[in-house]
Length: 83
Image (cartoon, helix red, strand yellow):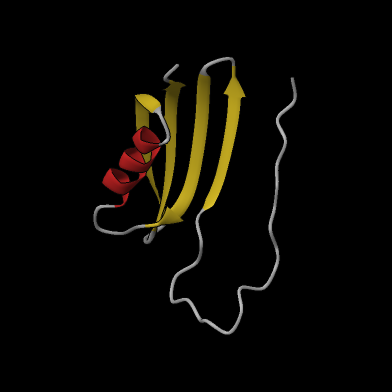
């Protein structure tokens, strides 16, 4: 089964943002989910990401954080959907 990617390129209105939005990719195989996130470094980023995943009824199996450049993180998370 092929994964589908959805991109929303609609303007967000008049608001201005100081930081860029993260790039997020997810692939699903049965009950397993592979999540890749490319985002700016920030205090507590990983804790927020893991908490969000767990709030979506998934159990984190493994996670890897790699620094990319001076201000960016490449995060990979393997999670399992809780049935």
